[in-house]
Length: 318
Image 1 (cartoon, rainbow, N blue to C red):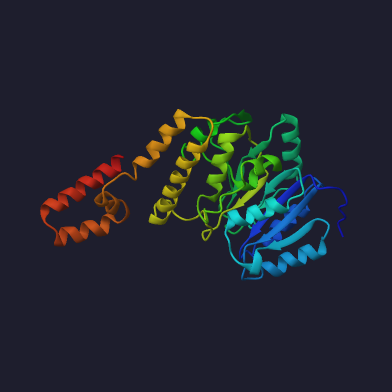
Image 2 (tube, rainbow, N blue to C red):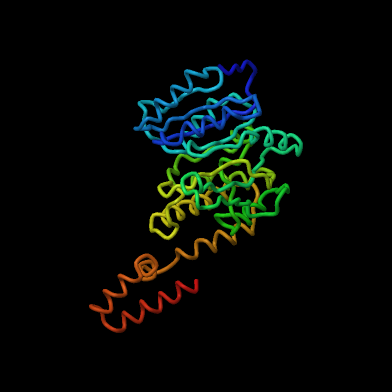
């Protein structure tokens, strides 16, 4: 049995929900880390498959390093609430995140901790390898670099301007982030009001607005690409836009409470809101253009058909 007697330097929060096919691989990637001073908190968000049994088995086999936790009555509360539970239990000075279907290369923690200490920064975000060939051998994995200049330190609010969801650059993945626990607590952890899409983006927005962040070109984490994953949901669905509007509303309120005012962010926020400041007709055109047009051509007056066609052109050029 792997022995661990010193205080953990890194608390790893791994949340799970019905991931029995991937969970062992994720946990084993932590066990194989070259950096020895860690604890792994397995947070079960109400799994109904074999994930619970697998997690309990690992916690029993490695009691000094791995612990199992769930919400009261084994309920499902969402990823943000589960991460907050992990944060409340974390003993380490640093916190890292690994979703239960992703993996780390063996030197991930060692390189991240060393770089954080070397640069004397509170947060390191590294690039991520999008992992396709775990089940599609013919498809090549792709390194996705964070959409800003590499190997640089960024002060607030620069990353908010450059990265998604207000900017155009690729945002970091949670499996490539390590940060000081004290900072995470100061930020208030994760927002429980978000359950599903945009949970990561809300947290990252708080990070960009309040802390210096070092962007690293290293890529020692594998982000499993799954057709059935939450992130795999299309951004062109009505559900996505409902959640995005919820995020924009949250950000607007958060900025009002922020001690510093950033005119550039206000401008980008107004620009993001603009696409939703449209007539009901344009919203219909956005989400069901083909079906709506066919129906109108068959049943509506010619004048209304012209309005729909015009609204579609405006949307395309927006």
